[in-house]
Image 1 (cartoon, rainbow over the protein chains, first blue to last red):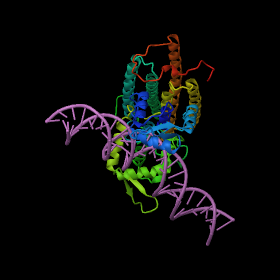
Image 2 (tube, rainbow over the protein chains, first blue to last red; image 1 turned 90 degrees about the vertical axis):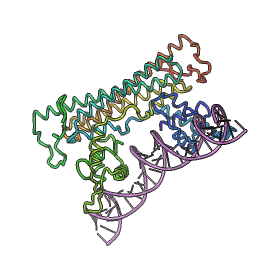
Image 3 (cartoon, each protein chain N blue to C red; image 1 turned 180 degrees about the vertical axis):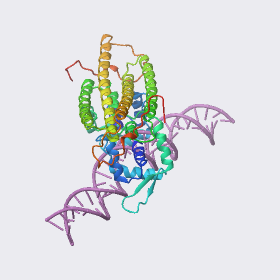
Image 4 (cartoon, rainbow over the protein chains, first blue to last red; image 1 turned 120 degrees about the horizontal axis):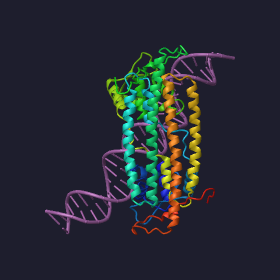
Length: 209
Length: 209
DNA sequence: CGCGTATGTATACCGGGTATGTGGGCGTCG
DNA sequence: CGACGCCCACATACCCGGTATACATACGCG
């Protein structure tokens, strides 16, 4: 839905054609989200199908101009007014990976977490460098400001991810410790076919299986 | 790719069939990511196509058992060893929205940001409540731990989002203020067809257009 | 028995993401 | 001058994740 409404927002400023939209879209989000040109046309097709935009025969047959319709304008302000839903977050591959790694024999949780931590930190440094560039460029055009906000979101998220990874590690260490002190916590339900939690492999710092 | 490898990780523990995988997948991620059953079968089909799993005729013809192959096992450990790529983040609808809203006449940035802030905070409270429940449930099975980690990721992200939103607002206020003090900053390039940055609408607190 | 329900599987459709194909305009260089 | 090649604008095909729906069998129950 981001592409759909992104294009609609651009068309709200006036009629545009395909590749023009691509350029303007990318100038808003810098280098983060290169927009494949194919997506522009398929999305434009869907927008037209849903009556949110209209083709506008601009004389020159080669470039198909599109203009936003009244319904499109309504849909757009709706989008701006309603918050983006965060109660049904999309599946995150990293969370899935850690969730699957917990209790899987042969997986060194610490190594997985540390490897990811290094990678995410490196990505964050790249974003920070881009941000420094963006702030030097006097950036006071809407495009520059938008690009800056996008970059900062990525930095905030990356930083949160690093902190979450640290939190995961310390939590797993703590769990391993409490399990070590009472080696046989009585299973509450014998009917539970879950594998033994001692499968959780968290090594002391510096070692690896 | 999260579903693909998630199912592969479950199959690494032994042969399973479709709906069994669904149940186990969801017990790892609690209520966050209900896995549609259709995705299980299509993904299983793709995994078989790629030689990562094999159908295992378990006598009973009705439930098709699948078992991981050697190549599947290799692919899985690869997945665990390589970090999830964060250098090409997927498009975030909220970032797109704010990027498009900047400098769009008729859009009250403050209202958009505050509305989202309320929504995200409310989602975060829900997650926190779920976390409290999860921690009361003695949770020491791998499933409980995994669910807890997933929940905490959502909380960390939501919190980062709220802080980012606050940051956006204060940055826009600051920009509006500097623009107010020097009302006509000379445009650096006359060839730039960008609309005037004064279109950025940020209202003083409490008002709205 | 026949009906409803639960279980397990399969399929159709949508949107986002990526790569590739195609045709016209235009410049360059032999 | 004209053939080649490049760039622009558009289009198509395919993959994966997400959602809903169809369908068939098993099972319980009056």
